[in-house]
Structure formats: C-alpha cells, structure tokens
Image 1 (tube, rainbow, N blue to C red):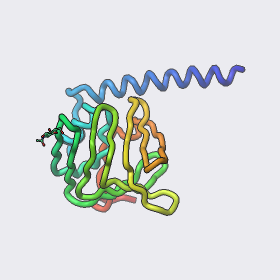
Image 2 (cartoon, rainbow, N blue to C red; image 1 turned 90 degrees about the vertical axis):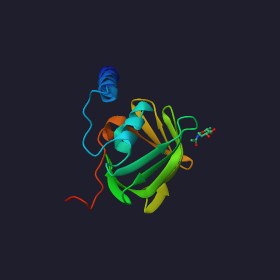
Image 3 (cartoon, rainbow, N blue to C red; image 1 turned 90 degrees about the horizontal axis):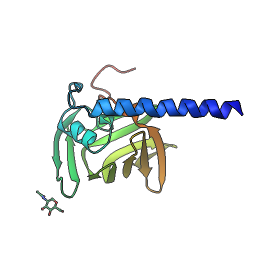
Image 4 (cartoon, rainbow, N blue to C red; image 1 turned 120 degrees about the vertical axis):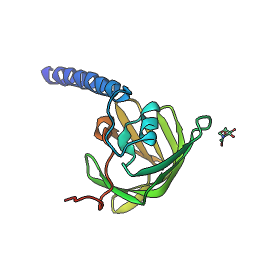
Length: 159
Ligand SMILES: *[C@@H]1O[C@H](CO)[C@@H](O)[C@H](O)[C@H]1NC(C)=O
C-alpha cells in the first residue's frame, strides 16, 4: 500500500513543477532563444510550448479570427523529437488551424514511426501534456520536452 502513495506524492510534485515552468515560459520578460520569434510567441499565447516549431521560421501569417495559419520555414527541416528520438520532418510550408490549446488540420509535419511516415494532423495541449494526433491514433508526451525550439538537422554539427 505504501508504493501507490509515494507515486501519488511524486505525481503531485511533478504537476506543480510543470505548472511553475509553464508560468515562467508565458512570462513575456523571459528571454527567448535566438532564432525564435513571432511564431513561437503565438504558440505560447495559444497554450503550446515553442519547441513545436524549429528555429528556422521565416514568416507567419495568422488570422486571429479563424485561427488559420501559414508558417513558412527557410527550407524543409528535419528534427529528432524527444524523448523517443522519432524523426520528424517539416515541409517548407506548414498550414493548420490554431485555437486555444488545440491545433487542427495540420499539413506539413510528418513523423517516422513503425517504418512509415505519418502526417501529424492535430496537437492538443492540457498545459502539462501534448497529445499528438495521427489520424485516429494519438500519442501523449510531457510539454516540458518541447520547451526549446529545435535547430534543423544538417545545418549544424549533429551526432
Ligand atoms: C479571417 O477569418 C475570418 C473568419 O473566417 C474571415 O471572415 C476574414 O476575412 C479573415 N481575414 C483575413 C485577413 O483573411
């Protein structure tokens, strides 16, 4: 009986930790890493961590009424997603619809899993976790894994 209680206490402290970190991320005084800009700021405003977009964003068009957006990257981009090291690719042009804590109808982000490339169609946030939707399937990861915008691989030395 002791073990479940310990786990519960641990879980609670994890929740409060990620709460305080999400508060500091949304603080506008926090210095954003160079290479992050307007598109990353918008992610924070809509309840998402900046790590969903790579640093190589060239432009953002966002209609605040409909939530429709267009993100242009400098080029196609490949990153490795934590914590399971899934390969993901971004098209040069990424479109979708963003509302509070939910991004839908995403076109332009693909992830490699089970020997296939899958288009990520939606991403939901509950503050603590992100739920990635691939068609009818979904996978949940802690938001704190995405606190930094990744650099595209191949532009800098990578292992
Ligand atoms: C933004 O979206 C709204 C609602 O769909 C639409 O009425 C409006 O024309 C759009 N604005 C622009 C600048 O596209």
